[in-house]
Image 1 (tube, rainbow, N blue to C red):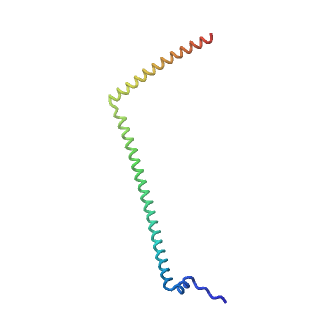
Image 2 (cartoon, one colour):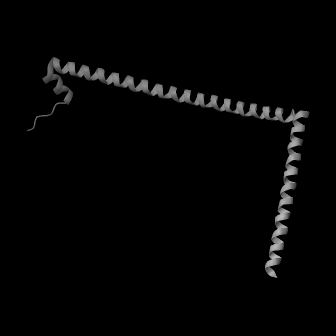
Image 3 (cartoon, rainbow, N blue to C red):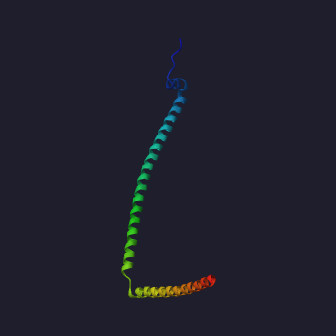
Length: 123
């Protein structure tokens, strides 16, 4: 008949003696150390996630405040058009009107010359 096999832990205890016990203790300590490291890593991940969400919320809030500030500044600038600004704007408008009239006159001359040329070619 076959002899019944002993459980690995029992074999290790009987055959290894004190050296086996120190290896088991070392393994147990390493295992506990790794478990603690894993728990520390998980808690740091949670903390990082929380801080990341918090920073994102702060950045979004700051961005909204900056956008609102810029809109207020635009509205204030648009409402505070002075008489000097109005004169500058009117001067620019008058100059653009004068330039456009000059362009129109030049294009009229070109159109008349092309019409004359077309009439000359037809005859």
